[in-house]
Image (tube, rainbow, N blue to C red; front, side):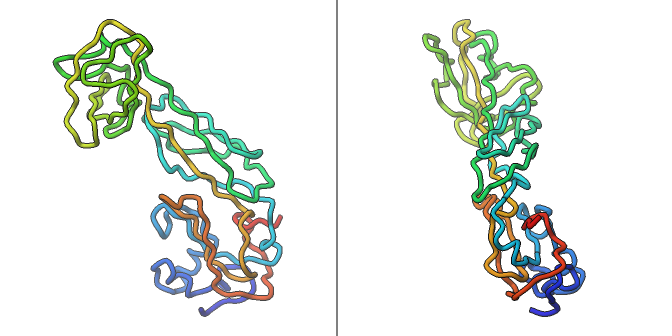
Length: 269
């Protein structure tokens, strides 16, 4: 690893780090990688950046939430959702076209040493009349502004109130998938890509509903992760099944690091 020093700035960062994310190891990519906190900048969906970590930052334990990664956008959300975070942080979630599009940090909290649990409230059940809303001819269920709540392939739960009769073709307490959706109706299928289910209207009852899938997310912390050595590290926040998990690879271990220019990810102040 060449072209490095003990001053925390781009010109002194590890030139060879660029090759770790499949970039040409030149000064332009060295500068772009330094202090990067933008998801997807180098690896799709993941946040990868190079940081100079001093001795103070190695022992930081007062972590706070810097961002959230959505691991499942859910379905059926017609309004923004409440988010519950363990500890003292607060957040909420933004719904767009039935799915959670962002989880927002309202208050970052403090004192975290481990990644907190994050719970997004479930979408509200959408009720309809089993007779008047069901078309035997078109195999559709009428729901007001349907395609603002559901998109094709969304997972939904069909529920029937106690004492009511299930719609022909559907079973109470069963998950289905949106086969088609327009401004007023949806069609259901037993699997993604399957044909629409042949529906038969039931009697006039309002105790029937479709409920979308609950969204999930994980938090990313500053400060709570401790680097193995003072020096230059390549820090990666994972995506997909590893969303929110942090990996820190020591590039150059040093006895000291001065001129602390980075205080976003590894806070010492």
